[in-house]
Image (tube, rainbow, N blue to C red; front, side):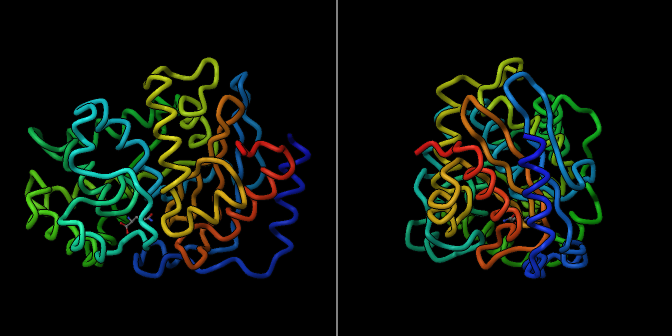
Length: 300
Ligand code: GLN
């Protein structure tokens, strides 16, 4: 595994095209795209890495996986009356289906769906408490205390997040937001601004991969279902292409992170901040493809 990761890293640094960082969040736009890290957590809990695996980065939409686990823990299957389980075929911040489908987002990984999930976690308490629940869950799953919210990134997105605000108000107009839009949005922006290293993120995926010794935070059935959603919806309108290339459940974030689950075999975290046209890590997707080819971990 060490040799595979070294060879993937060398190959990534040979490329010229790193993609472009997320331009709509100024704090992320200014990150150097030519960075790369990969960490793999194996069944014995062993962590193997290459590149900048100890450098914290903005995990952004990857937190949607953890807020989904927390929301399902809080509300159970009731959540599915507010959000669907189908791929959207549209970009992560698209408004188009929301109007057509009367305010019920297609899945919990597009922004509208994640805003609903966060709203379900917020009801009946202060934003700080909902955020603490998400952060504590992530810390517990990664078995690491050293994970923080970057306030500058949260503020940066708050200032430029007109599209997410539109989505939240649209959800509210359809009665699918229980809290004041600004409160839900503030919680959502802070959740997205959590920073982790690939080492921590790979560890955090161990429960979803069903690895021995991983914290027991969700049942096998729930893990399978979250993995199914990651496979079908985790890369937005690039989900089919990711399944075609990699053949594993994955979740991306506009910070350039990727969480990839090989059920019963490994949890993988990859980071490279330059994005492809779907808003998923450009080099990260290449690296996941190389890893899947080298290990034959595809579920197909
Ligand atoms: N915070 C980002 C947003 O809402 C998350 C999107 C993403 O990572 N794809 O736009």
